[in-house]
Image (cartoon, rainbow, N blue to C red):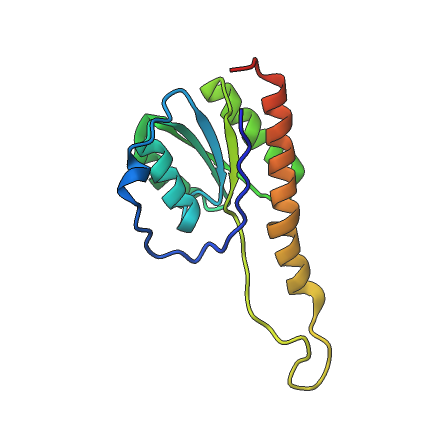
Length: 159
């Protein structure tokens, strides 16, 4: 089994895939992707499904997630996910393993970001609320889903 970590911005409008990427055969593999209903997560889900992998996408946007599931068919499972909640990560990974009976890797694409000044226009330090929000999604979310994924993979029979 392999664990894939990928923390990136979700502001991807279009992804060009090299021809060689399409030739990879991932039959018999299963991946869990956070932020899989849009942006880089969605592009990754499309790529992995096109290569024959089973894919579960976790996302807060249930409407978008269900549309992706309709688009990509039986190789894709949508599971609601709040990456800031460890129990939600554990449940989503569990549903993935229950559904596909395997897990080959976790791809963390859920993420947020914004540029802001350290000091605002009134020369006051920036409010930490947004910093906390970004940290919970980008850092804790990646840790929660990666560690829950690793624990689930460790319990599965070796390939």
